[in-house]
Length: 196
Image (cartoon, rainbow, N blue to C red):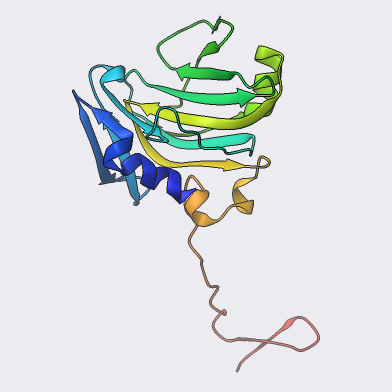
C-alpha cells in the first residue's frame, strides 16, 4: 500500500515538533525507510488521513507493519469503525506492561525483537474479542516515534513471505539465475552427460 507511506511522508500528515522525521537508507535492508525519532513519542508522529474527521475506509482486516526497533519508547495507534458505527482505538506500545481497556480504547503492550520486526494484526478478530462488536473498516493509522518504518499495508488474509511481492517482504529476495555446471550437458531423457 504505497499510498499510505506517501501519505505519511506528506507535510499535511505529519507532526514533528520536537524530533526528526526523515527518509533514510537503512543499512541492513538497503532500501529507503521512514525514520521517526523524538525524546517524547507524542511530539513526533505520522498519521493518515490528514483530516481528523476523514476516514481511510479500508475494509481489509489484516494490517502489517514492517518496522525497526530503535530501542526507545514507541507506539502506534489504529482507529477502527465497528458495526455499531463507533470509532474504537487500538493503541500498541513498548512502554507499558499491562493491557488497559475502556469502552472506546484498548492499550496493549508490544515486545519487539532487537532489529526489524513484522507486526501483524487481525483487526476483525481483535475488534470482536476486545469490544464484542464486528469490524467494519479502518478509519485512521498513526505511527509515533521511535522507529524506522519500511511498509504499512492491509490485506484480506495473512500471507506467507513467499506469497508477497518483494516490496512487501521484510527482506527482499534477489533473483538468482542458476548457471549451468561447467562441462555438463543435460540429456533429453533425464540425467547428464559429461563433455570430453
